[in-house]
Length: 362
Image (cartoon, rainbow, N blue to C red):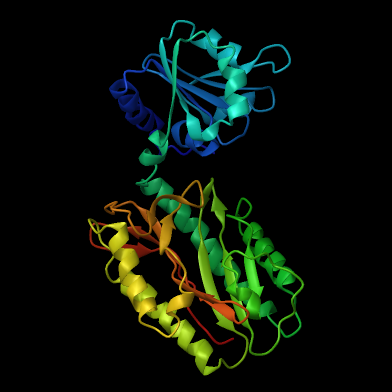
């Protein structure tokens, strides 16, 4: 659903600056999230054509009316897929272009070969990251949607934890959590919910299975909600019952690493530095060789966006960057601990968007 608080024309103008700098006449876009970011259209099966004079959104009968409703200032073209190829439709909209660029990361080789075969243009080049770089800094409406998704996740987790009991299966709790988020207004789940017990919690991205909960087990939960396409992403780790000294030490180490990184979040700090700060805590602990790589990532219309908080990334954080801070320790055949918060960088430091308590013992 389009928001009146988003200036899509301004976003398009920023893209056109790149097009002008590259001295290209037209750009062909296929990335679903990039198209939504630029136009407001939230459906599938669309191709966006952008030039200095006109912009066209090509879709088919399934999404034509929806595209007309969700976009403004864009000419929506309904293509009959049985009688006209996409390449011919592109050429029909822009018959006289010379230099054309396309989103290389969002077309398969087979798709692009089929399109290119019907294009009359002599100079066609692939480019990457143009729209993704525009999406790095979120505006107030984007942040509000991510915050709303995070609040739904917070509330859903609180209610789901009342279902935790000895003998419950991982997949049953995961389904309950997904249901809670949907019932509170989430448009699905941000990604497949990760909910793992005991030694399986050492799998950073494992799938919930039939493992049943026992006293003393780790419970690792990584999940998120979705509002208007914008995602939250939070992780909490618990122990069902009284934790052992080793479990407590793992949790305290991860929490300290996260706090150390958060204390240094501010505009102008680079991603590599934040990663080093957290990693130093993990590296100086008894669990150094089990520390996860990387500290976090940005999120928005996609779960993993630029910038990434990892080694060799000199990106300087800016107000409006929404990032995760998620250090972890993963010991094979024993268990893992990860804590993850969603934060938005501000001029004064940061604001935390996720607010579920970091309780360890259940």
